[in-house]
Amino acid sequence: MSTRPGGLDHATLQRAADWFARLNAEPNALHLREAWSQWHAHSELNRLAWSYVVRVSQRFTPLQEDLTASSKTLEALRHSQRSRRQVLRNCSILMGAAVLGWGSWRQRWLPDAMTAWATDFHTGTRPLGEQRLADGTRIWLNSGTSLDVDFNASQRRLRLYSGEVLINTGNDPRPFQVETAEGRLRPIGTRFGLREQHGRTLLNVYEGSVQAICGQSEQTRTVPAGYSLAFDQQNLFATQRAQPEREAWTQGLLLANDTRLEDFIDELSSYRHGHLGIDPQVANLRLMGTFPLHDTDQVLAMLEQVLPVRIERRFPWWVTVVPR
Amino acid sequence: MSHPAKSSASSFSVDGLYCAHHGWIYRWLVGKVGNVSDAAELAHDVFVRLLSQPRDFNDEGHAQAYLSTLSRNLCVDFWRRKQVERAWFEVLASRPAHYAPSEEHHALVFEALVQLQAMLDRLPGKVAEAFCLAQLDGLTYREIALRIGVSERTVTKYIAQAMFQCVLLEAELDGALL
Image (cartoon, rainbow over all chains, first blue to last red; front, side, top):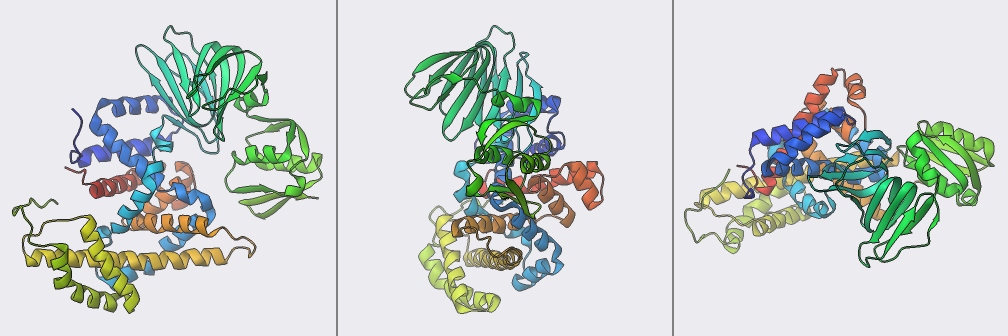
């Protein structure tokens, strides 16, 4: 029987909030995630409580659009001691009761909720190194990635919502399947990478082979090791050579192989906070080389040495690549 | 706090309530917000809320108490919005002149800030600060601990406390609590 609305108690909400705080404290602790999964799976009520945690997290999402200004504004508001009392005096009422505005906002934002914290794995600007799943499968998550893991007695299923994952499947008799917005993938004893970007799934196979199936047209193709394939819900595009750079990030490297500078900067920006832009005049320069992901400032300095560009830092969080 | 409907057919229609209460609500709001056009809009909002969340009242006193709470809450929202607006414009004004985000982008972030501030206002200062530093600035608990001068354990406690207050609020708004 499902929980009717009105069944939530404070203790369950408190436990959900505690889980949130602990998972945040140790984002990479697999044992915590597993314990959380058990708690989450345990009852409808726990899942309901967790759905509220997800909602609250989502409230911060629009602020990412302008992180620095948002952060500064909230800080200014925190520090203006006066403000709080002034509002209270103006209206002679306790703040705690004033929650009406929030309700209206929620209606506007909820439809695109259920991304980040609803998923089992989630990364921001830092990739997440090797993670071992229950069946021995190993996965690596690139920056900006959301992924769900759903294993049961008869099957192993992953769902990639955004970002990029490299998967080295474990030896296990249960069928393995990965789902993306565009379709499904069935690996056969293999190592492969998936990237979800601009309404397409990009598959790179490094070992074994992977069968790709379009979600709508059900077009199917098996891609062998050393090849890559992009597809959307309707079409499979031409099979091409595998891209070694789509595996390099798992080693903490960003590879450029005759890459347009704009594309390179676009990718680099997913590994750092703040704005990283490029002047259109240098967008089409080509770049070769191997760059360390853990220090994006160093990568920018390296660019100045190998290309006719200059790094303009208006603020620490506002960086633009311009012609020299 | 639920009100079991004792009388099945409510004698308090929104029409009737509007006639009986709009006058004093409007005058009270003029006094609080200091101008007639904002007051008129807020008074209107009170009844829009009532239409969107109909409820039964036991008697005239109950209706009046509810409407006055609603009016005060809208008034708090109004002043908070003004404050966030001021802080936000100050931050924007300190930026380089050529940095001009689109109107849409601007409105989106501002709206989110107003709503978030409504929630953060419920939290003790350091708790709100820790929550923002974690959620918005992406600091680790260790970094937050250093910044606000408490232990990492306390930061974990603060984050749990902040999240609890927020989910409680969400659940309340949904009517999902026991």
